[in-house]
Every structure is written in C-alpha cells, then in structure tokens.
Image 1 (cartoon, rainbow, N blue to C red):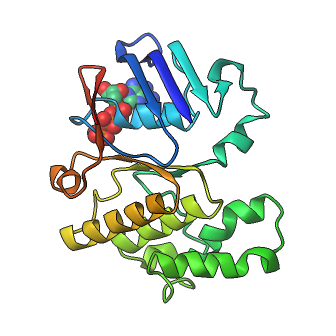
Image 2 (cartoon, helix red, strand yellow):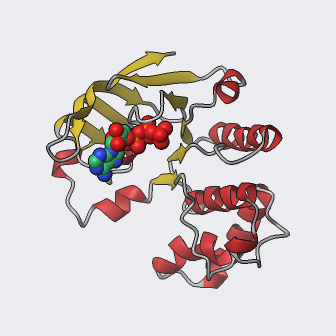
Amino acid sequence: MIRFENVGLRYGMGPEILRDISFDLPERSFQFLSGPSGAGKTTLLRLLFLSLKPTRGLITVFNKDRARITRRELPMLRRRIGVVFQDFRLLDHMTTYENVALPLRVRGREEATYRSDVIELLKWVGLGERMHVLPPVLSGGEKQRAAIARALIEQPEILLADEPTGNVDPPLARRLLRLFIELNRLGTAVVIATHDLGLMEQVDARRMILADGRLEIHD
Ligand SMILES: Nc1ncnc2c1ncn2[C@@H]1O[C@H](COP(=O)(O)OP(=O)(O)OP(=O)(O)O)[C@@H](O)[C@H]1O
C-alpha cells in the first residue's frame, strides 16, 4: 500500500533526520514504530500521512508516486489514511459526537446518512455514554478514544497512531491495544508509534525501529 525507497528527510537546512529509509507497508499489516525520543517517529508518520515530502528518495502511496501527487488529489488519498495525533486535536466547542462526525460533515454528507455509524463507532470505542459531552470534560483516555473514533469514521485502509498510550494507565493502554488489534482483524493496516516496550511485548507484531536516522525492521 505504501512503499519507501531510500527516503531521506531534513527540515530546512538542518541535518538529515531520516536517512535511507526503505520499507513496505502491506495491506492488513500490524506494526509498531519505535525508537528513542527525537528519533523521527512523528516525522515518519507525517511522511506516511502525506503532510511532508521527502527531501530524497521515492515514496509510493496507493500506487502513486508521492512526488506526482497534486494538491487536489491529497484530500482523497488522506481519507484513506486515518491518523490519531499525539495531542488529539479535538475541537473543544463541539461534542464528542460532533467531533467524530466532523470529517463527514465537512464532506457535505447529510446527518441522517451517518448518524447511526457515528453512534455505533462511539459505542465500539467505549464512549457510548460520553457522546454528548465536550472534550474538556473527557478524561485523557476518553479523549484518546474520541480521537481514534474520529480517525476511523471514514473507514481508512491504514490507521497511524502517534503514542496512543502515552497518557493513559496500563489497563487502559491494554484496552486501546485490543481495539487496534480488533481493527486490524477487520482489515485495517495499523502503525503504532510508541516507546512503550511493555505495550510492544503484548503483541507478536512487526517492529520498525528508528535509531540514528536509520530504520531497522524486525518481522
Ligand atoms: N518542524 C520541524 N522543524 C525542524 N526540526 C524538527 C521539526 N519537527 C521535528 N524536528 C526535529 O526532528 C527530530 C525528530 O523529531 P520527531 O518529532 O519526528 O521525533 P520523535 O521520534 O517523534 O520524538 P518523540 O518520541 O519525542 O515524539 C527532532 O530532532 C526534532 O527536533
């Protein structure tokens, strides 16, 4: 689905943060992306989400060359990639339900066509009782699950999650991990950026480890 070939990335005139990164992200795969703080995990996720362009090398996304993707094509492709950001990015003046429904509303869909899907998804992430409250009232773990639901509402083919268990206690982290595993069983490829070793030990999954700008892959 996504392929990197000798990809390099530097911000401005700074040093190369990522060097010669090559890997394939197969359909329905499950992988952790790990490495020390500052190793470039978020940067790699931004390349995967098409919000950054590589400074060298080739990225192919859904059989398209990243360098040839036009601005107009970007929203269509991004819809196929769900992202859970480290800081959630929920809108505080909208309820949980409205936050999750927003991507569909923005696309001009009538509420009657998606209402039951949003409610079902909120129940699936365990927020059935919290759908009418505003994000400032939600706990960290609830915000995390609202952000996951929003990333999933358009049924993406890939889910990227940046430190999804960073702010939650171990039982909730396990619950979130079960949610990602279930999602993967249903057919979505999953990439979880984390430096939580305990989390990675719970699943026999591919590990992509960034260190000194390079990527090591342990299948
Ligand atoms: N917009 C930017 N401009 C310049 N440098 C940046 C920018 N974003 C990140 N960097 C630098 O790139 C390097 C990698 O950052 P990145 O956030 O990708 O790492 P990370 O592995 O996700 O870290 P953490 O685990 O702490 O979130 C860091 O040295 C960081 O300072």
